[in-house]
Image (cartoon, helix red, strand yellow):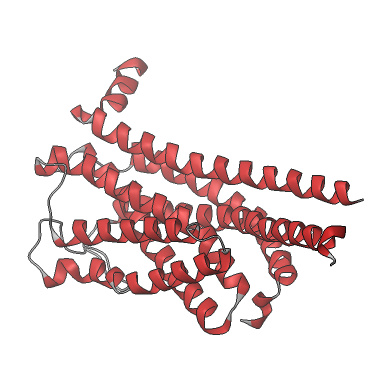
Length: 244
Length: 57
């Protein structure tokens, strides 16, 4: 953890990782998209709408994983005042919100032709929507205070409050008899055929690599914002009329 | 079957074209959008920092 506490050290590692993450993301999309859209089979029941699976599930997975990362960063920030943890959380939040929105939108576009409805207040959809609201709340709170540190602390607390909802999303299809289908995929086994698992894994990996690459861009931006803030503060302090 | 029929079939997605292509299109817009926004913000801050350093010179 301490290796990442120092921004210079962190950026040295991040800058080394960036070209790999970006290159791997591009490669995975170039390979995964044709398989997802063309060569993988249509489903015998759902036809070609099953191709939405290959962007809906990766978005859902990223949305949840990013929330966990944001919550972990928030905890590290609140407990140890770890400044990089806060920056990574703040840099991640818009991406998590975007992936949640994509998950919900793709789900709706899949639900209308297959279920006959864009929306239903079932357990998984509702808890995912709640996670989206927590993301929006995190982003809004962060900017709500004149003192940025108060905003950062407030949003960190909100992130932790909301993290309890994320495993509910996962277990909702087991705990309640809901419309959204149960898991066909676990860490050890799957009901899906190999020629559907392949594009799914490729797209999940593509989304993950994309997140890492864009996160690095965003963390650079956050570090610069902090530097600019410090430079402006020291400029004000150095003004002659301030040195009373 | 000609090539044009194949492409037409691909675009049609078995009748589900509007759903599948909307989903892929919105996803692409979201991903590309956040990438562009992040790059633009970074560039703007780099410039702002440069200007700050130069003005203090």
